[in-house]
Length: 279
Length: 142
Image 1 (tube, rainbow over the protein chains, first blue to last red):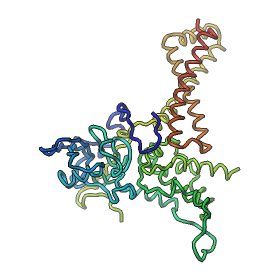
Image 2 (tube, one colour):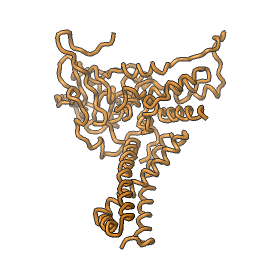
Image 3 (cartoon, one colour):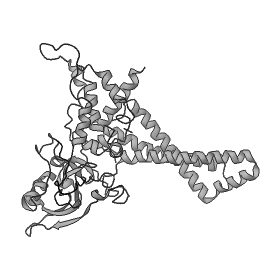
Image 4 (cartoon, rainbow over the protein chains, first blue to last red):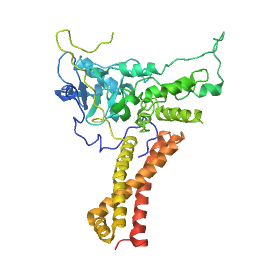
């Protein structure tokens, strides 16, 4: 099956997960236990089951998988609407991040049916039966669907995501030609939802030192900015067996980006720029 | 001050759970072919040892060579050899795909999927061709 754009949902009904034990490489505190099942309202006609990852830091217990039955006739069309439906009508302790509800803010990034996407731009009708919802993969979890993003934002800060310039500040704005400005297209649109970084196997295994696709895409966004004057130093900082070169071009990042961007290509551009300056 | 998630001062800090990754993430052509490239590379490194054993046996003498050749020509030996042939072609085609990526070409999602399925199909065709030639054209099998 040829995937044309990242918003296409896989129609393959087999091999929904890798054939490995559920607790493969899982440390004791992260093991997911069986949770409770919440029934649908008695008058519901069309019901969809959602299996949702729950973790309550105050309970002292392990994460668990609860099953909720949502009355889809009484609920909005998106997965985020289903989460609100559950929070309003069934279990008010269900915790998740959300803000814009239109794919602009990146807050509601989570793992739905095994791939990362924004809950506000994924249709309930595109979800499996049962639908499964986990937090972003490979993150420390604060509560339920809320991941701790401290580490990935620290990695973002490490690439110095701001304009670096030696020349004196101009009186007005720093000018760019339309061609120079177009170099930023496909990169400046990143909303830092971290769907890609969380879906990258290299970041799963080496996330403490590998910067990951979201941060490397941002690194290229500054490298390719005609106004930035720290290209050499930026490349020096990236030329490292782990920070950049743990990318093995798996391309789960490009497959999962909810904004249709191409972190894999941005990383290839960085690798090429490093080779070309050494000529 | 970063909130470490500790419950309170009286209870020992419990580490935050790590959300599942490989255990739940959906297999996709992207990740499956990446793993396949790794696994075929591993198979080929063992295959290279087998090749050295076969060549050493040929250099040692007819009797040793006969024993090794007997193993290769056995039913199990042929299955392993067939697997190694497929691994060789998949790894070769996957390597070419990576070379193209290194020139920053073929990164559109559509291209990624087309090149992915192309290397799978090419490996099947090349494996079949290699075995057809060795069995029927070159007449290698006794």
